[in-house]
Length: 144
Image 1 (cartoon, rainbow, N blue to C red):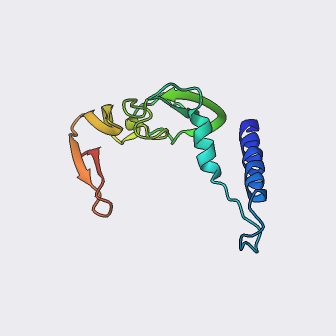
Image 2 (cartoon, rainbow, N blue to C red):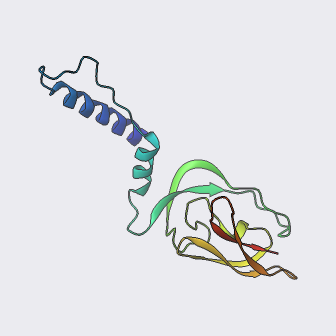
């Protein structure tokens, strides 16, 4: 959080410095407004320290149940701790930090291929099936 604050302060200072360098002959009558995309700055901070092609993702906490047939609740962020993942191949962070292929209902085995979850096998009696979202056109898999 300290690094984010430093970046925002530095960006504001740079914005004010560039605004003061404008010549008085310009037709600016209003004060220059500076806006920041804090999420973009945060993403840049997350990538620090991870070698390419890895990306820093928050370490997520999950409540673990001993009954593996019970769906586990979605993982939630507990602290601002980071770990490096390859979003193209990591089954627990496939395509994005919070996309865990093993959370697909009834999946026995899954893999991450080019940032997309691929079901290898389903629980007994079910088969992997490709689906298409008719609104977005995106493809995914499920066990049916």
